[in-house]
Length: 117
Length: 114
Image (cartoon, rainbow over all chains, first blue to last red; front, side, top):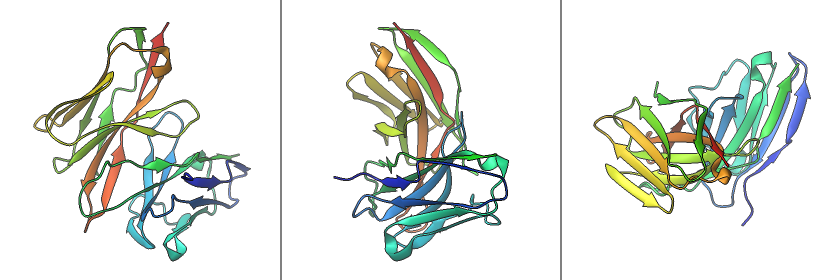
């Protein structure tokens, strides 16, 4: 079974430039998450989709970050304009979803490491 | 704002010892609790889940949950150098409908010394 695919793996940009990250979840996984992980910290949820609807985006800096999940499959996270503090690993994860609790397992991609200079 | 607190460490234990990792959470409505392991430069992977008060054992790992104290712990017995990683506590709660959300702690870095 193919895992969560993310690209690019690494990106270096200058502040005020824009960047986009792509994620393709595991086939059949209804829920897709974008997490930001700054070095030395735990993952912080940016946005959560269930199918193609947004479930939670309360921690997404909407003045510069945007995300979409067209057709309920793959997703794109965009940052424009980037700031120095956006340097982090952007993790995409997916999970099965149901009416009850399952294993709670999120399947993470390899991540996209962003460096803003 | 849901919060999950962990001692950042680093925690060092000798090979063969028991490593004890702790986590507290703020949301009393939380219903599921997880431990993820993250090797340096890699993505998190689930190692334990626990849903009810008490202990849950899986091989060398034991998760302990005390909802009254809002406390979760992970014990690693017979620690091995390959256990050296950052351990992330994650707490789950329901959002609207059937959706759930996981909030992660900042992680505890564990080093097992040969």
